[in-house]
Image (tube, rainbow, N blue to C red; front, side):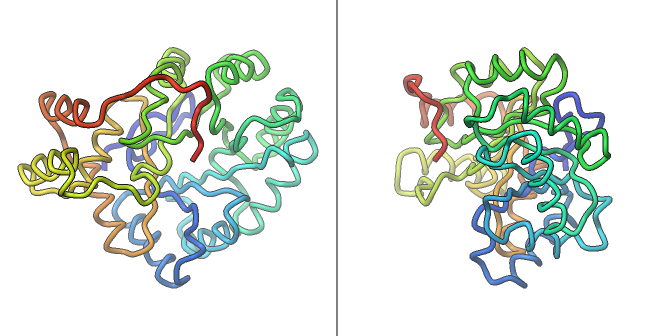
Length: 279
């Protein structure tokens, strides 16, 4: 599994990690087995959040006895992100995850609490050894500018954003901003939301043709396209060990410039939206 820097964090993470949004809807033993299979295959970056129902509990079960292998990320809800609320939310997440620390803690999206207060909470947690680093999620460029000013240079580890072939809005400004400032970009929902291009669609046929030439799957090709730049990482979800293995295989896949250009043409960027999409 290829590994890359996670912004300024002094630790590399796998280019393909594991997301857990809605994983608590799956059969619990199957979901736990999927996460563990992902760990076996090098997908040691596991992302979760307090908003994700019982996902933190599922993750806690999956990483039991293997915590030191994992780059563990969770998120605080904006409504909880006062200085004291951030600390309390993190401690609740740690209890559900059955661990004493997070490798990164994110503000789930911009909210009403001043960023200075949230970041003060993050820094307190970092000083206490409860988090290694902190970052953001769903931040557009104006929000990123405000966060950079409030948090200081070299503090923001990542910006986790919606990114799939049907929603490439981050490429307009968010991705360039993060690359300029040394912030990792983590793609959530990399397969979209139930609208993955099928083999009978023009774009789907392109993916299938490229996949066939590599002995790969269309989903592996998509993941590799989405992490084609050094700042990019992806966290697909899997609720079976087989799906986890399929995702992990994208970590070793390499696409040619011509293949990347075909995918880019089949799924064009589109105009820049007024607001950064979250769903």
